[in-house]
Length: 120
Image 1 (tube, rainbow, N blue to C red):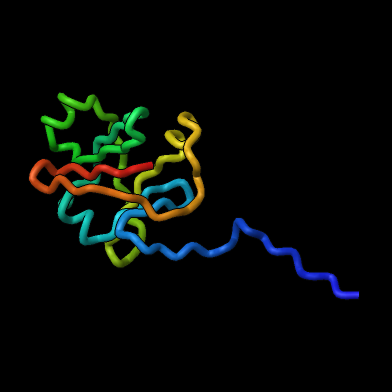
Image 2 (cartoon, one colour):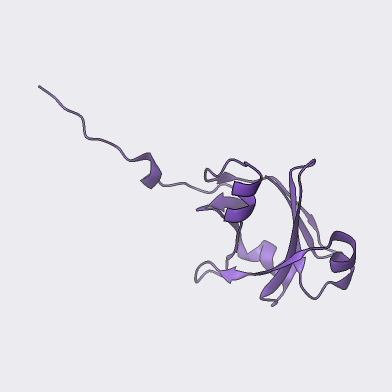
């Protein structure tokens, strides 16, 4: 009798095909995008618009973003030695019943305003 091995889907590796993606309940931003938007800032402001399913993030130094969007502060973490960055969105995903599976994310750059718009 052949008994197949149990496969654990949670350990299945995800291969990112985008410069912005969701992995382990963190938004991962590749180095080239992070540098354009955040520069050397380690603190960011973020907000989520439920109707549009859009997550906005900008450097904490952007006062206009703070005034218009009423963003909350978060730490922009170093993801790896390549310079990629990550932002924890575990609470956001849970509170808004958003799919937390690892996946590529659609995004828009507003480089002149230093804003990254991510579709969740």
